[in-house]
Length: 251
Image (cartoon, rainbow, N blue to C red):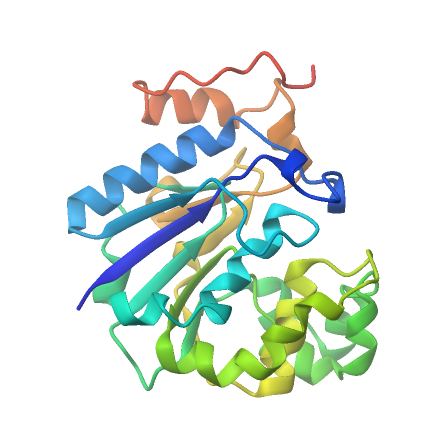
């Protein structure tokens, strides 16, 4: 089987809404890219970093929907793992494709406590900024919403979801981001899901985490744009060969 790890890191100025969702470039991408290149070399996986627009919709975050839209991807690969550019593969992470071989062609994402551990009322409440969440019950949000920073896709799951995914161009409300849209497609399509181990998408700002119980560290949130946070010296210790330019970080 041929497996691919793919990341998108495209100049936001090439899009109509470079300030969309307040997402901006970060030197975290250098650590992320380096860590996954090493990871792929270690396990014999293909690695691809997309740097030019293809869909060209609003902002680079929407580009991942090309993995559904362009069916040619699935002529070349059995599985594709999409990874956000602020996710770090730690050196002891095992081969995720061996950990989760093809299981009934499900869409695979990591267990995310914000959804799975929430009460039904809490699940609705934590999506109060999501206009699309009004369409769903607390039970649907709790059991079907995912954190899409790490996803393993395959031909069948993407084909299953395609009639809903291809409507991305209809999203005009700028309060709706690509993750909100993706979760609505997961619920509406009823695509089969598999929750992988949380270790493969441990989302926090990186200041406090149990190194041995994390495989992929998702350095999410605005703190990665600040200089005085503990994640930077930690990453420098783990990957001393990487020398990112931190001069643009906020003091």
